[in-house]
Image (cartoon, rainbow, N blue to C red; front, side):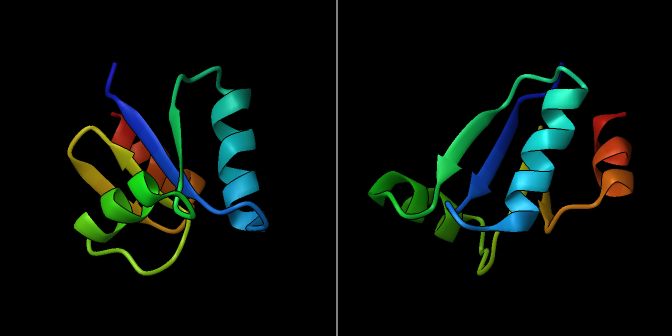
Length: 74
């Protein structure tokens, strides 16, 4: 199983949709809040500007798309 990290912010509806998707598929992931110092550092290291950013293995997805996530999980 590939390691999954979701970079989020508290009031982001797209982040909520991503979390609901992973929960519905019973996939384990780590949430990383970009408002924390660690979250900001990790998020910036990915070259990201917005949220959600989803890291699946070595692949980084900017934004949330069921199709993109399913492709990355293969």
